[in-house]
Image 1: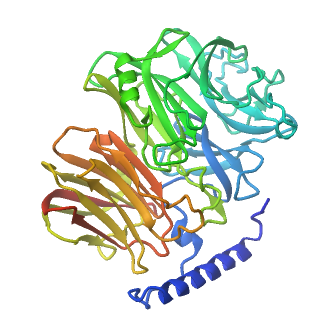
Image 2 (image 1 turned 90 degrees about the vertical axis):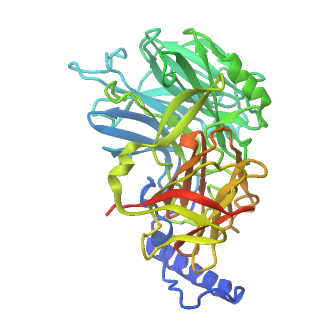
Image 3 (image 1 turned 90 degrees about the horizontal axis):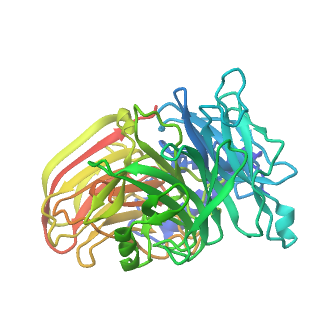
Length: 538
């Protein structure tokens, strides 16, 4: 594996390759401004401002997220000694607001039993596990042991479930001497346990990915687990292996009705290729999960036989935080902002990957069925600084909205509204003097939102990265279209129609985008209002 210790040499190589790339770009594009300053480093161009990324090394799935004593804890799949996937550890970061993160020492290390694969963590408030001392509340982490030697030997039982406990609020963990707590029942892909306290049936629940289905377990003490049922045969998308489930009850917005939500990540098989996460809404009797009949009808009528939390190509393996106080009451989510099609090939060297912005999740009943809505956490508004606002903008050609002279576009929140959309389509474009373009918008002809990163900068590192335009069908019947956009150096997160349709994608421009413009699809229209906030993290 490539190590990251000689960072000065790596930085020199990055700058050199960048300068060579810029020279080639100028020679092949006569419209490029030759006065462009090309002295950007990898940190300047690609280290996110507002999304968590490790200081160095590889990162993928978020793990073990919980809230305790004023801190949100984020653990993550981590290989600290290389920038591609390797022996998995649980990295660790903490935050007081889910926006600004502090990376902590590694929390759980691999050992003779295997790598530490994905899992979850809970606060054992009543010390049901017995690990707490002196009335303390232990943190219990549950993870998958992955026996790499067993896998290489051709065995099928190389994954099992284990637990560890922390008596210092999640800083360090002691592995349970009785591991594994769930042995492998001869299933090749048997992993990613997600624990939840079921206050309705008063017991611990755990969902586990097992090949092409989800297995449901219960426990009274987090050590002894009973298999209750499974779910998934013939239901939903099955284009790849099922992974990283999550399971929780939610109150339907504006009602007293309670439904259970099951998240299931799948790789590959997403709506725009590669990794993605589907969800199901239904009822749970303490043993068996059954999807709602109206939701099942929607599944069967959808193109992929599934409903997705995000139709972009870069939101995978996302799960929710445990132990959020009742006084808060929100369901809070975060995902890995990459895709297994190209995650190990993206043009960063010191680190690889970032997490999505933390999101609030709501459950709404729409047209007799159910939908999850996602929006950025409200804490993000505390970072707003410079503000730009315009109303009633006539769009009758390629119209500039703003450039970097007014607001630095490298970390911004954009909100816009188009009243009475009718047959109007539009394309927003982020551009720079290097000639790179990231396009996104709405096509009225096929009723699809889209993100087009084919000309967004560096794309040649993988033939799958920019092979096509990502699309998502608009499901809202509201004649007015509204959206919130979170823009960082190398990512865009689009929340259309109050979060009913979400698209997340990453990109790697040759220089920062410095202009935002919009043009109509077929005919002129009025952009009702647009408001842009610089997000300040200095």
